[in-house]
Amino acid sequence: MTNVDDRLARAMTCVAATMARYPLPGAVVGVLDLGTGARAVAALGHARIVPHSEAMRRDTVFDLASLTKPVFTATQLLRLVEQGRTTLDTQLCEIIPDLRQYNVADAWERRLTLRQCLTHQTKLPAVAPIYTLGADPARLRAYVLQHEWCPGAPCYSDIGYILLGIALERLHDAPLDALDPGFGLGFHPDPAACAATEHCRWRDRILCGEVHDENAAALGLAGHAGLFGTADGLLDYARALMQGELLGPDSLAAMRARTPNNRTIGWEAQTPGWLGGAACSDTTIGHTGFTGTGLWLDFDRGLVWTLLTNRVHPSRHVETGIGALRRAVGEAVCR
Image (tube, rainbow, N blue to C red; front, side):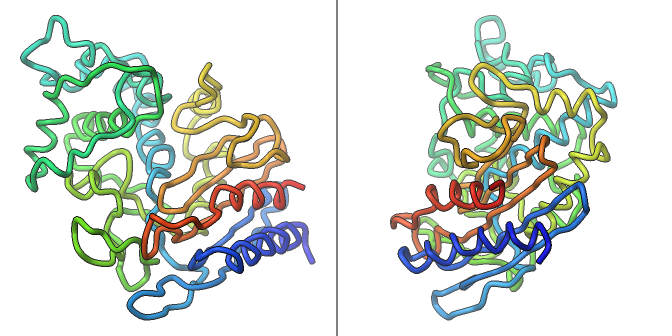
C-alpha cells in the first residue's frame, strides 16, 4: 500500500463510520502527494437516494458551492492582476462605475477594494435572500449594485463575492461561464453525471446538475457559488496551483498570505478548531462548500485532499455529522 493509499484508507474509515451513524448519502475522497505525484480517490454510498438510488462514483460531479470563491473567482481575478488589468487595491467603483450610482459621493460600498472583498474584510452582510425579489437576473443584479447595504462587523460574505463576480464580468466584458477554469470544472454540468442535492422548496424539485444556492440560481451566474466538478478535477487544480502553473510566485504568495481574520485571498488559513483538522501544517489553506464539499492544500507537506459529499440530499435540515467528518478526514490524511 502506498503512502496516499494508506492516507485514503484512514479517511474512508472515517467516512464509513459517519455514514453508519448519520443520514449522509455518499462521499468521494481524494488525496494527492505532490512529492511523488501519487494520488488515490475512492467513492462510497450514493449520489442519489430520492426518488431512486444511484451509486456514488469516483467521477461523480458535485455542486462545489462556495469552493467557487477560491477555485474560480479568486484565481481568475489574480490572473487579471498578473496581466496588469487591475490591482488588488483597486476600488470596486473603478471597475463597476454604476455601483451605488445615485450616491457616488457617500456610498461606502464604492470604496471597497478587490482585496477587502476577496479576504472577507468588508462590512457587507454574510447573505441576503436576493432570490425572493424576482426572477429576472438583470433586475436582481441591479438590486445588488444599487441596494444600500447596512454596514456591520466584517464577516464571511457571499455578497462580497457576488460583487466580485460582477467585477470579473466587467473586466472580461463577458459572462462568467465564458471563462474556462480548466480541469473539467464548469458551470453547466451534465445532470446525469451529478450528485443530487436538495429538494428545493423554492423550485419544488430535487436539484441535480443545477446550482443549489438560491441566489446563484436567481442571478444566473455568480461569483460566490455555481461551479461544478469532480474530486480529480479539484486535485488537478490544486496541483497546478501549488506547482506554480496557474499563478506566478507573487500571486501565489498573495493567495497564501494570512490576514488578521485568518483568511487569505479566497481561502481560509489554518487555525485552531478549523474544519481542516489539527494535524495539518500551519501553511495549510482550505475552503468548504455548503453542499458538503471541501478542499485543503498543505504546502509544507505537499499534500492535497478533498472531501466531496451530497450532505444536503434530500434536505439540508438534518444532522449529517459533516463538521466532525471534515476534521476527522483532515486528521486521517495528515497523520
